[in-house]
Image (cartoon, rainbow, N blue to C red; front, side, top):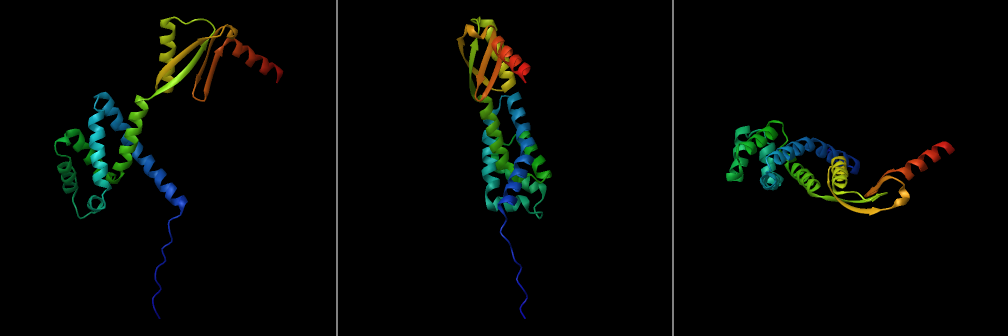
Length: 197
């Protein structure tokens, strides 16, 4: 009688989604740490370049086998990646490779690179704000309001201003799907609604 062959079930979509969510979650702190480092030293181009190269190299099947194979020492793996990077492998980059290697996270480099680029794009993006004011705003008032909006939304704000005396006082702001109604009319309407209910 022949020995039965093991049955390998295809991985379900749910398991794939869970695995991908786990990869994204584990990669996030590394991407955020590198983003902070790049922001502090204004070195976005350097880190984009380094992560792009590392992600491409580690994403290659043969290299992936080397970095996950315990028969290769940590020093050998780190040396291999440093050699590939050449002049780009400064102390900070070597420290990143060492940290990822020690934590068994080198295979996360493609996801770290993706998240780093997303954070960089979010920093450079601008959101449109339509600000309606009951009275004309002077330069200082507008600047202070835009600064508050940028701090809240963590994006640059491109403000378009209009005046509507029917607001009675204050401002009404639309940013994307969000509406911030700090007008006197809005507050009176909200009060009337609460009194009715």
